[in-house]
Length: 220
Image 1 (cartoon, rainbow, N blue to C red):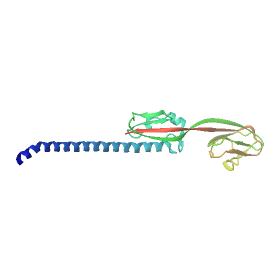
Image 2 (tube, rainbow, N blue to C red):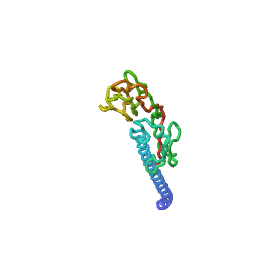
Image 3 (cartoon, one colour):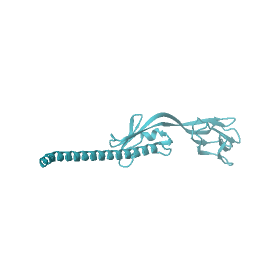
Image 4 (tube, rainbow, N blue to C red):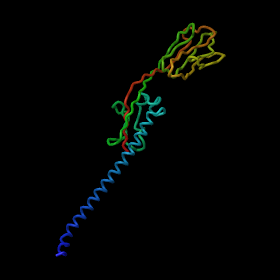
């Protein structure tokens, strides 16, 4: 009787063992898939964060300074900015500006940035009396051309109170100046007589900025 009951329980035991083995197999497979997905997500997160940081850095390939992108650089961006062999996409205010591959399942980082447009302008200063000219605010660089009349000698050029050019023998020709973009700069000239018109020409860049959202997606 006992032997018969034991034999009758053998099929049930076999089924139970089969179910346990199958459950373990499914659990291991699910855990492996989750682990692989976690590894992939972590890699994508690391790569996309690193790329976004590089793009908005002061010395980034698209930047004019930290968190300010050059419009010209953005318009000429390419998929070569993507890290390694990863698929990636760069979008500015929803418009794709550079891409490689098809990063549909990657990680995305968004950054608020400024986009700078620059325009070159020239100022022909008609100097008289004080021999000074004020440039627009945020002018960071300027090119000065001095052409003093015969018998007139310009010895010094100051940007506000700072001497940026000096030659006791006289300044004549083209000079590049680095200025403070945080100040309104007045260029003042020291000369032995009034310079009059067309003695000074100043070329400079005017910058305007607009806010935008930079969206970076990477799928490794």
